[in-house]
Image 1 (cartoon, helix red, strand yellow):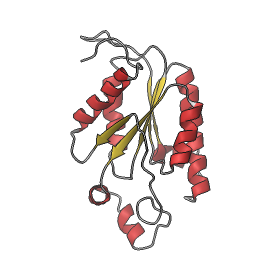
Image 2 (cartoon, one colour):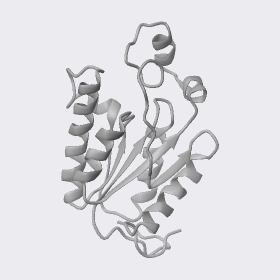
Image 3 (tube, helix red, strand yellow):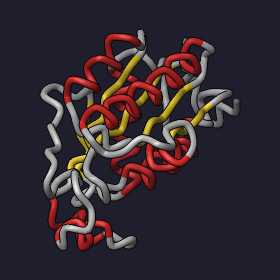
Image 4 (cartoon, helix red, strand yellow):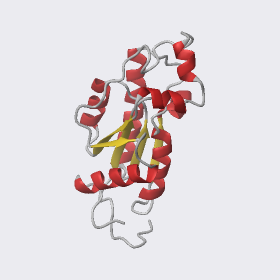
Amino acid sequence: MSSGNSNAVFPHGVTIWLTGLSGAGKSTLAAALRTRLEKFASQVEILDGEELRKHSSAGLGFTKADRDEHIRRIGETAKRLTENQAVVIVAAISPYREARDEIRQKIAYFVEVYCRCPLEIAEARDTKGLYKRARRGELICFTGIDDPYEEPLQPDAVVDTNKETVSESVHKICSALHRLGYLTGTFK
């Protein structure tokens, strides 16, 4: 851990759960946040929902039950890492409020960050053409098109990824971590 010009530290592990529509910028934000938080913590891990779907959740579909199971699996991994003093950044659509709330109850140190982005902006950012395929009916149960995204009711932080730079969003998250007591000391 390099402290640079600050004395900020994480006194224990924490899970930072980034939720939002596909294309909201969760993965981009997770990478930038990891770079920033590595200054304050010796172990920072990213759990990317899309990547984990290929491995630990291979075989699961996109029904509500399968999506909830996918989130539970990510949550269990995040919980174990957090209990072992890691700072864990989860980047997962996690569209259902009940599943996110269930994970929040299981992880002692948990911060929910809503990556807010209007659907039309998320669609415009879609480099994989997933929204177009969903609109044509080629993908079913696609969040934001024919399956709901339930916005968090009381997130610990909200970043507006269509209005803020990545750097501004990272600063907002760090400020929330500090305000909540997960990041102590002073940070720059």
